[in-house]
Figure (cartoon, rainbow, N blue to C red):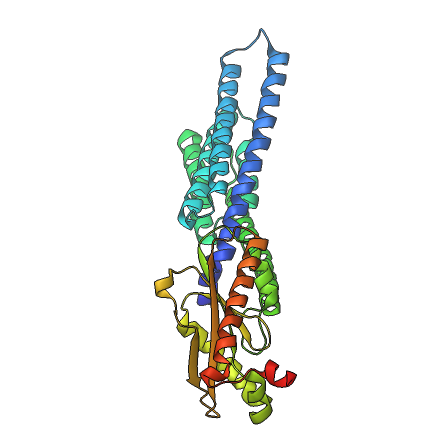
Length: 367
């Protein structure tokens, strides 16, 4: 039970959900501030219309308090905008701003209501500010207990110092404090549920989208992913490598498709060793494409690569063509892919010729 209580007061939530709750709280502060500015300015205008020519010291004090509220709201709105524009802001700064916002407005409300209390009137401003704050400025439960409880305690001490809080029913007062703390807790945990559900749905959609762009056998990116990446070209220098497996059909014919699949998987692993940090795609049946932004001297420089497939002991070789460029759009990227493809078939024409101990299947079929 104790551990459950600790977890409830200080829940462990992932960074993404924490950020979403923080930013929603700041958006709430922004809109609350704008609403309060509009409401208080309207109040000032109506007050001046009604009391024009008969503003005494008490009325002037009221106007000053309202003006202070408008100023606080204006500053809060400006800071909120600045925070919302900075998506990399650390969590502690969100918490600091929320606590300062709540405390500043609560202290303003305490002194505004203290005037009403001394005049024998109802204290509504403080309770209104508290209700709005605990409902929309979402503080972690433990921080909420300290902040909300501290503000209620501050007001009660102020009233005690004046007349022993004679016109306050202590039981009702502290029940209201507990209710305010409970509302903050419930609101915060409700936001955890809402944003966690949204986060899980978003992750699920991302996983589905990623799986649709992965080749099921090699787990490399597929043509759909290549099309999407081509739309993001920004003119950076890159090298594209197009390669395929020499005589792959004969591997399938002689050793079977299971062996062929094993070869494809091994090639996908080898590509990551040959071109670390690159982007890898299964372009077609036995064709692979690699995109790297590394300088040429840091990339594999050969036009062929050979290895022994481990499970079946098959000698496998790759032909490699490459092209360099600085594509700034989709079309320029695929023009570069086409250049790498042409370079590949120049290499294949040489490595498959009788001069290099190979044979060109296309020529053999024609004969």
